[in-house]
Image (cartoon, rainbow, N blue to C red; front, side, top):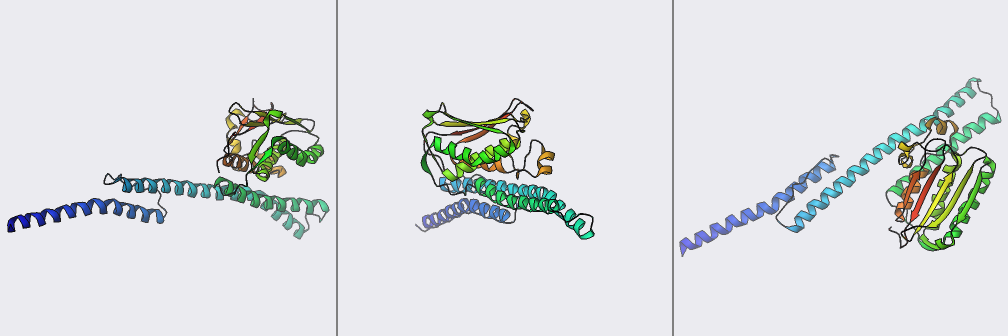
Length: 303
């Protein structure tokens, strides 16, 4: 009996030690990985655990979280680099004119002050758009969804852009298929999307050209909105790049004239994605116009 008791206690102690090792090891691995992530090192790997499904799920969730943090950190770094690059031109213009005014080289005319005011306006718009882009890409816009008639959505967008088109000498056309019916969207955010698309088309369409916005039912039961222009077109290798932050088909032209922040299409695509839709670009090449196609699903959108 004494020998059996000793064997039993020894076996129990050994099993307890082995069990604690199997439990403690994956927890220690997770703890070590968490310390590395806290120190800014996202290149960590947590060994897969076969001890229990719960610990394996925890390790997988930790890995997914680390990848998301890495993507977010990379995006923020790129955003800061892009922003620093974009503000350089207006700041340099302001500094040159202020120095010129101080030295008497630049005359204090209305034209000089208008140019400086335009650069300040550009910086203000850039600050607003950068915040919108960050919120949109982090899905933090807080959509207020409701059912609205597609005809009303298009009519409001056209009415808002009409004055700008008339001033630029570009014809704005609108067509809507009655079968489009109603959609479930955030009306304000959808107007922001269509406004960005129409402004983008106007910037790339010379005076005497035209822009057409039209809606039709999609094959999936949703709706498709096309914004087509007769403008400068898009090189085929840039059809997806136009949705990247600060991308311009003609960078020199955009910065020289200070038109747009380079974030309009980035924001538009993120908002459309939050509605469960897609936004794509199509063009036959430079000088042959372009079409930006927005699709919305038939069912309630994903938030």
